Length: 320
Image (cartoon, rainbow, N blue to C red; front, top):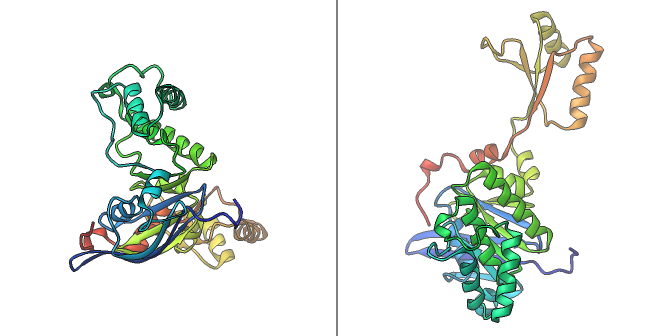
């Protein structure tokens, strides 16, 4: 992607209220084409409302919003023709077979019978559903149903897909299969707007993450940029005896010893986990003739980012 490419989503000053309850309070967003963008936040932070507005399901109270190059207020039909939406709850008709669900979507997109069958066959193959194509969707596992749901979204060949909680309720293997599908879509130039409660999912998939709390964007950046904002990184050094532990504490001049029995011989030294700081730490130990029995690095993860920046979700007032 070059700087000349317009963003897939450009939002300035988006506001939405229900009576006196402000749900979205002037948020700004830019999502680059062909990337995976994740919107995170506590339950009730306004994520679903944001997706509903961007996908034309409800209107905004204020804001300049462009989706897939179209003005959302002036060209809603053009926006709808450019996007796909896969919601938290499957849109699959469980009385129909997998193939019939795809053919129904082909009809809704006004594809010819020949093109509809071709597209259905292509998607069944792509999502590993060929053997289940003639079976009722009611017999599908959770992972198969989610794959079919996403395949139905792709019938219209959208360049921007909103994925709302795409792996809720899936087992770890099915979740990872879905992750790979999402990566492949982005690799093919499709923009993904992802909302999820699984922070690991956002960490694994997202090029950029925005954190929404109480209707306001409180942080945005790559996963690594967000993690670096949070203190608490450290290196854990385990020693075999008190003499080595005391020597390391003296050589480094910093650290914390957990006095519990299991960690009594472990020294935790504040660190950003970077190569330079780790090299310096080991050089100082080496100069003092001290070698730890074990070393591990802890850097803040997205759980730390989420909890530090949003606080306790139980303290939040409910919004949509």
